[in-house]
Length: 115
Image 1 (cartoon, rainbow, N blue to C red):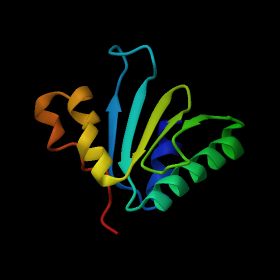
Image 2: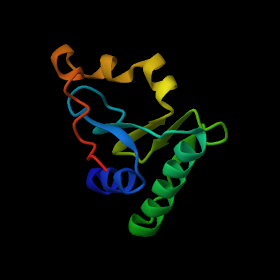
Image 3: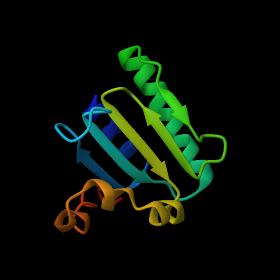
């Protein structure tokens, strides 16, 4: 599931993709993925495409919040929680700082491939 999520958001040109291992730290999910879209429209499109792909590939209907505004969309797949942000909103909430150890925050944004 994690690989499918990462591939989907990368295919849709999400930026600054961060993967956080929650196993042993939270009962909510095994992983958290945080990424950004350049606009509200792209944020909503990344989330919608992810939901469509997971339904098609895994028969999974995900829970989604925030798609209407496109500032911050949360997608709950069960095993993976995905946050898709506009950059300004992401900077404001700084979820990485809450979930990553201090030394990993600066280096965490290495999953995005230059494109």
